[in-house]
Amino acid sequence: MLVRSLKLIFCIFTLVLLICSFPIVSGAVEYKEVKAEDIIKQIENGEDVVYSNSFIKGTLDLSEANLKTVSSSRGDLKVIESKIEIENSIFEDDVDFSNSQFEKPVNFVSTNFSGNNIFFQSTFFDSVTFFNSTFRGYTNFCQSTFFSGASFSNSIFCKNVGFNDAIFYNFVEFFPTTFYGDVYFQNVLFNGNSIYYGSGFFGDVIFKDAQFVGKTYFVDSTFYYNSNSKNPEFKNTTFNEDVVFKNTKFYSDAEFLGCTFVGKADFQHSHFINNTSIINDKFNEVYFYNTTFSRVSLNDTDFQEMEVYWTYLENSLVFDGRTYVKLIKNFRNIEQFDDADDAYYQYRVEKRRHGDMSFQSKLFDVFKQYSCGYGVRPYRAFGLGSGIVLLFSFIYLGRPTISSRNGKNKVLIHKLLPESLRRFIPKIDWPNPGISRLTTAENCIQEVSLFDAFYFSMVTFATIGYGDWYPKDKFRKWVMIEGFLGWLTLGLFLVTLTNVMIRP
Image (cartoon, rainbow, N blue to C red; front, side):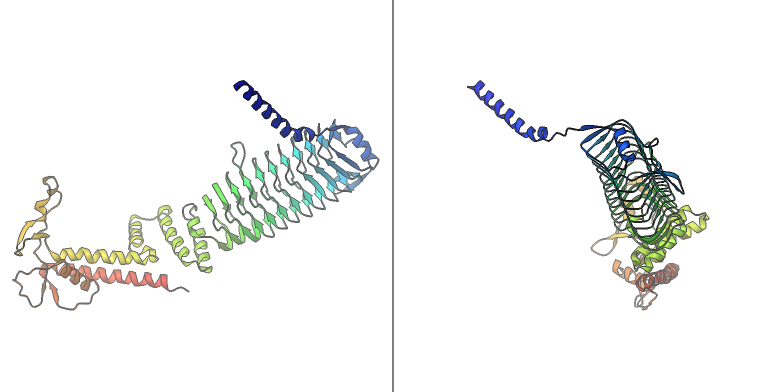
């Protein structure tokens, strides 16, 4: 019975497996073989090249093709009058369309390029599409010109790809495109919109001297860290319209050196995992809301308006005095006064740490930090005043004792300490108490509560002087000291409070 049940289960499992695998088997693609030389002959004859589910055997090289040529600023170009449309196909070897001029659309959809691909100094007058294609070898589009739109969406570049000195007169799309090798866009002109939605960069990313005339989108893109690669580099890059790096992740160091942002630069919700250099750049409007930095440098960077909260910069900003001053002014201009105060406070602290100051200057600076927070922390002056009043309250109270029920001094607190600690804490040899009421004779012993001493200290600190209490002879010096400290502390508190509460 058990054996029969096992056989039944095995049969059912086998049947389910066959049913599930049927669509895969039935949907298997049969590639027809096409010789590369046949495609070259079609191009020579001006025939449209249209293939689907094909395996293109051999090297597709137009260098020896018999085609008419035209002169251009970049040399002679072979004129290709054929429409090229290849879908769901495989190129066995290299593809060389260098120094060519394409008069009609070029479409490669779901195509696998097994070898190297050379489109060097090519001109595309019509649309260019490399949708959902895979480039397994090196790819070269350097010095190429795209007059119409170009799309590399959902494609994969397994090795290095170069677009140096290329010109895109219309839009170009790389979303989502994956670059496993290095990608070079040096000195490229992007005249239309450039879209890199969701793209992944695993190697070097070079946009040196590139110019983006249209809008640029790097939304949801990722720059991965690779020990063999350099940093994503935007050096001397110009963005004439808005550029958006929203939700972009930089796992390796990011460099924006000498860039110009004419439009809005949006880095909101982006994450810079390693060092970020934004140096000598020029921004009009830049947004860093909810942007996280590990370590960021804004040295010699100018900006008209920077939308950011100080909490996202305070623990990661590399100190530069001019940068801090610009940020403080920026926070005040956009009415983020609390951020301006926090940035100013951090600026003074960092300036003392990094500046060349004498010991006396540092000591005075520390006093300003903890007494009033450099004029932006009024609660510190209030706390300092409270501490002074409380300290002098115990001084006026006299030698601390524990009183018995009959009011006589019973045991000194000093005597209650362990023997090992007594020698470190000397006895207070002051009269007890240090203040007296006006109605009490000088020689009369009277009890003074802590509240009485606190009251007298507060009156002295505030320089009110009601006259109901007076200090004894040896305590007059403490009254003068507290009065001076009170005058100084109250002044600090009022100035700091005014500075914080009254805004321009």
